[in-house]
Amino acid sequence: MSYYLLFFFNMIKFLNKKYFKVLLISRTSQTSLHNFILVFRPCSKKGVKIRPIAGFGFGCMMIPALVSVTVWFDKRRPLAVGIAICGAGTGMFLYSSIVRFLLEHYDFHGCFLILGAIVLHGCVFGLLLRPPPPRPTYNDTSSSANATKSDIEFETQSPQNKFDVAIFRNWKYDAFLLSCFLFSLGFFPVFMFVTSRALKELEWGEDEAAFLLTAISIANICGRLLCAISLGRSFINNIAALAFVMMLGGVTVALSMICNGYHTMMVFCAFYGLSGGFMFVGLPIVMAELILPQHVEIASGFFVFSVGMAALLGIPTAGVLVDKTSGNFTLLFLMAGSTISVGALILLGIFLVNKFSKR
Image (cartoon, rainbow, N blue to C red; front, side, top):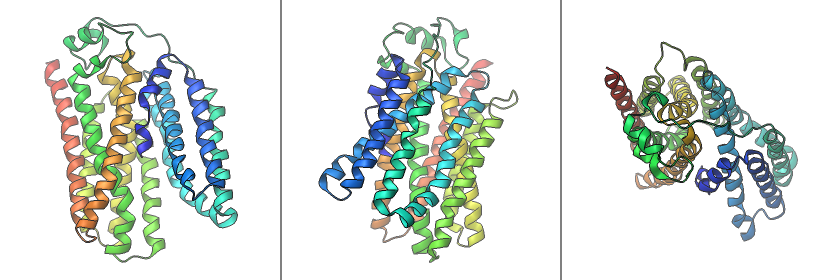
């Protein structure tokens, strides 16, 4: 997860210079090279040192794809983002089986060679990306439905300086980043430790525990599709919908500790995966509503940075917490659910402010 953190400012610089294809293709090649090197130095110290290359490459591959879809679609943005991000959910579902198959038939070396070749196909799709279109600079309140007049006036003072931190004068965007951070801080540790809880605490078999991830992946895909279809409707407020789904996810994680049977755990996986998939499609959509169009690139960088920072901090902290409690997962899941719920309350606050300010 920490690949989100690597050099995202450099990504923003390339995006602003409209080098979408150069950035994505070069970093895709770099990521594939990492896999090829691991084939020949899988256990050496140099093999360990070059692994950040993959993180850098994956991070640079993600930002152009996210920004490109966000800036090119306006009216049908939820559907476009949903279709684009559904690939991640499908990969989550398929890759565990694919990697297991490759390891069984081609051993470690062959597995990484094939994975590197698969990643290298990103170069082909990178050629299809187009740089963001020219966007006007707005100077009045009509430019953004969710930005205040003071936000717009301050943000448009230096529109050409893409590294200007003026975007943080928009408190709604700041609150949005905090909400994303808290959601990710609680979401990723649960995904990492749900099978460990099934194996150690519930004493399930390996096949039953492994199927939990499959169930979460299927529900995740359904959540992404549901978000793509539902958001953007005239009768649905995007921020309110995300706040509700995030709260549903937090409550689901907290109540998962009373799920001890196979069927109840399947229900937990369904709601957890559904809420996670919905959120990862909906968050970029809501972000685009809270900022000015000319700030999409840098806002996307900070958004992905907040998610990556939460993953980098949350997962190791969760592991330490489990060790300190002698393998008890109750406190971890309760804290994760509470953290997600607080993030939902922040989104709810943004929705209420927007609602009453319009009056």
